[in-house]
Length: 253
Ligand code: MN3
Image 1: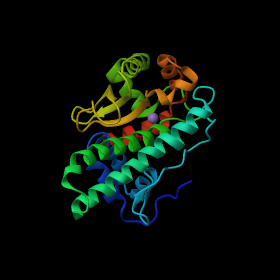
Image 2: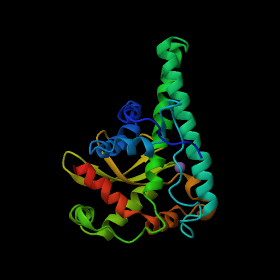
Image 3: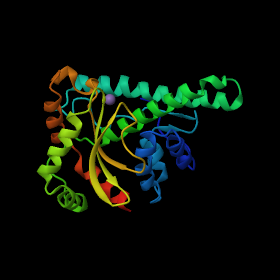
Image 4: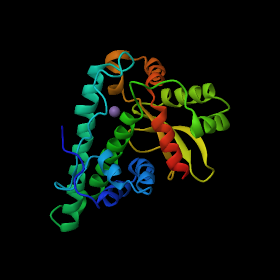
């Protein structure tokens, strides 16, 4: 497994490089940074696999075994999804950052700027989305959230069941590849459910993502084939509400 975050004092800067990516990087990173603001910057870098020595992002280890979410999410899907797909986003992110550095230094032609910006947004989004996704799940997950998040869901959706229906519907109706998301809208301080396409678009700036479900086919096809709805229902059995609740509390600050 790749090494984890090294030296101290760079974590905010490294997370901010994702912020600069735009797209989902600009959505998930503030939620992670909210924790940094509480004085735990090192943890932010660890979560995102920042390695100061190499100056690159590394693939954060899965916080549980590949088969830990069986029977809801199968081990083979988890292994391919984490070790190949997520690893590919990390490689793409590092490649884009390297290319952009070359652009600044004049070793990469200016005509590459648009392509590199898209690559940074796409792969940076992929990296932060998946980092959050693994933490959104747990072998001890499922059930319903308590605490402040449980109260906010009841307040903003009417009930947990109504939230669940909206989340399943938003996630199930992504056309092509994308994500379903439960977010905090920071101006009104209300929870909303929405979805985004691919790794980056579809959410307006400032939303704080709390819970995401990956509905790219690679996330479920081996076990569920075309039955995306069954996969989404199974996802509810592994949601780590404790972690989602912490993100909510950091986000409302
Ligand atoms: Mn995925």
